[in-house]
Length: 511
Image (cartoon, rainbow, N blue to C red; front, top):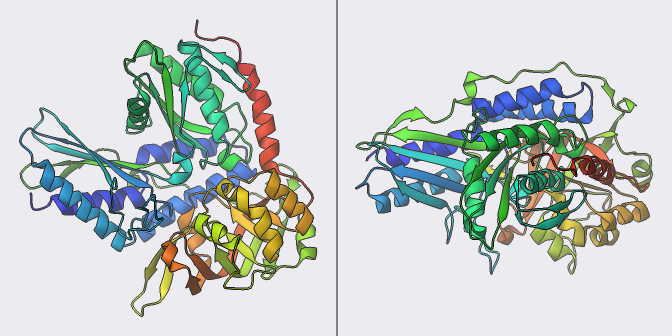
């Protein structure tokens, strides 16, 4: 199969850079439902822009290209050993070409392999079938949404919903709770795959397999079809909205599968996927390995529509504030939740490894009045050997909650940018030391990459490219104040409101 490796490479590039048409249709439908001028509507418009840019640039839609997970169906007698070698080679090449981020990290040492190859990565599942062709499917599921996967063991007590028993109604409650607990941290509005039954391992596997279903398919099991429809109708009544900003659309798709279980165990496993629902597949000629057909309609079949800009927000006129770094405390104290901030000047990226380091060490650069961006970018070098930013959306900020307040105090940081919000400790530090949290649009890696005009330098490359501290010259970086220096948090407000709405689904529905 002389074309197999190249076909897998094409599959990786297409999956990473071009959302399929069925996912685009779900996003377009969400844009039509969302109230014009709201934070969620603006976010969906930015998402649509990002989808167009990624397709045009042939660059990653989101900088977190996830754990490459392949499911390969092949005829009896196919050489799976050779196919695995070629899949690994294609992943390494796609990483070298900046179509995938370097995401394979040694769990004990923290060392990044640099090519997405290592024990357990990429994930490759082979299954034989009776057809004389090869099918290869790929899903790129980022860490932010992977961290919002959840598994329930029934019976259990659920916050806001009470007892969930070992029946269809208990399953219903688990799924609603799974959507609630994700809030904006999984880059809502999202898609969920649900696995009912199995053991702890196969339940999650079944859930993830549901994400390979087309977004517009119909479940052949009538009970599960009704359950999927119910969840789609009611999860969007929780008011979580895009990025957790509040709004009409929280869930874009729900797919449910079922398998047998042990009498003593009853698991409901939920695989949460962000709006950047990157999965694609190909059918291959078994003799040559050449692509004969794409499994899902390609993105170019449905160009993303462009919105007219809206001036009003849910709280009246939208206020935009332009800030040049370094930023003063006086400027920060004038900001309120809901303000749109446009940042120009130097900005510094920092994720888990850097935050841990800064707790006990000095910073290599002056951070007084600075902006820290929770981001693990995709980077490449141009023809002159200079670093350039290929993709640079925000990562989930809550992971830095144990460190952030102390680091704000220690270094005089004035703004932290990420997605999904942070907790009470950070909110207190913002208030005490005069800083704000800015929520960027999760997954919008191309949209934000354009804001970085020059890479001024980098520290801690030993942490790996995503975890290094990149020093970036910034122009026109827009984000929304969601936690201010006066003790206000949009994230806490939306979570409280959605918790109250969740309670309306406590009574049995499927009996």
